[in-house]
Length: 218
Image (cartoon, rainbow, N blue to C red; front, side):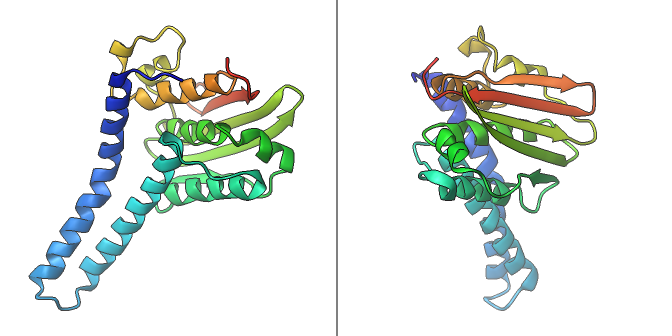
């Protein structure tokens, strides 16, 4: 998979945007603790601990979703991916419904790129829930490959047009920004795995994303 330099730069911008918040909060908490003369400041300490946890969770998520890092192979690796997604959303307005326990054939079918597609689909789905809600994940072993379905339900659910556009086949790099580049990247990963992410919005009630991972490059 070849990615334009501009796409790489936009992904870095997106990554920095999502990390600067908790990183700044850690810094602010440490400053408060320093101002207290090194004494115990429960509020500042709680801020540092919470923000450090958020920063760690986001780094773990983006390391697998955007980077070369993988979670391994087999059911244990898929459970690790599930845990990464759960920790990334922990403490926020979005709940993840992803049943535990996947069959060996599903886990095997997702490793080697499919797990990255899945995490990026969850990232895209989260953008459709500005007021919070529920993201559901369903996986299935099919004759043609491994099916991934990600749904988002909540108040005012909906994806912005530019994010949907970023996942289309005829999108130009000049149309991408730090706000929609992850949609483009998710689709690139899906095509590398022999599939194509389809997006469906059912009114103002639900957003659905689905892909069939065949394991052969499209």
